[in-house]
Length: 327
Picture: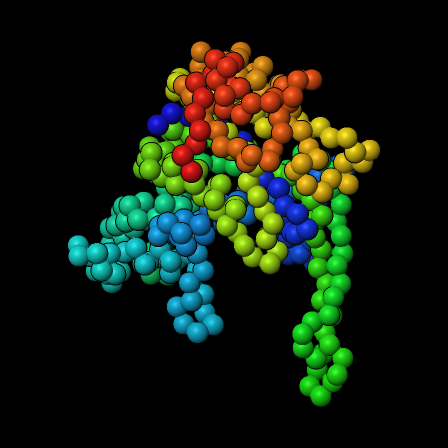
């Protein structure tokens, strides 16, 4: 496995891509720039849920109710992976603290794809005085997602289906905050050195790519319905520890509106990849492959030139080793 960079673009229409629970669950906004922000945690949650629900993968970080009304903490979750030689849950009394740590380390990495991808801190407790932890740096790291344009928040009010109280006729009121439109860009890196420590493999990488694209598309909840993946670019390098960096900043959008906050759909936008092509050309000898997935609704430009053909064919015409992502 070699070092890779990821650029992922998706959009959302009349929904909330990532609410802030400390601010009435409003979409997260950089107040200075009016840019929409989506945390890396939100994207990782999307990937985890997709891999668990659609790909039958074991996930370490998930909500598990072990008794009615009681949710596992990280310590209890880790103890699910203290296993005997037959793969059954073992009693920690039969292990020293060091043996517990080794046992859990091996089993969690073997069984939990999200730890192999994203790492984690895993607390271990044999007794109240015998504690330790496992800390793994994930090979897959994302920066916060940011919209490629300014956005506006809309405050929506409505009535609920139920009365506001027993014996009352007046219904409850519902309030929520949404964005009419946001085209969001995420940037990530797959670090081959960390991958060796978490045992991330090529199959894990393929599932990660699948989870980014199809997880986003299949996140059909009330607040997220309307999300669509638009572009996923994976640049893999042939030199160990080498990468260009900040590829997401080489992508710009263009439109004909006098106010970008009035954007409402992807068909109003051109994605200009001129700066991206320039930097990739400068590093062509270091690039092993470009792997791309594109939604057919997206229109691209290279400088002032509208790209008429399929983006993959266009990149091949620029002598980039380009293939379509198999997702």
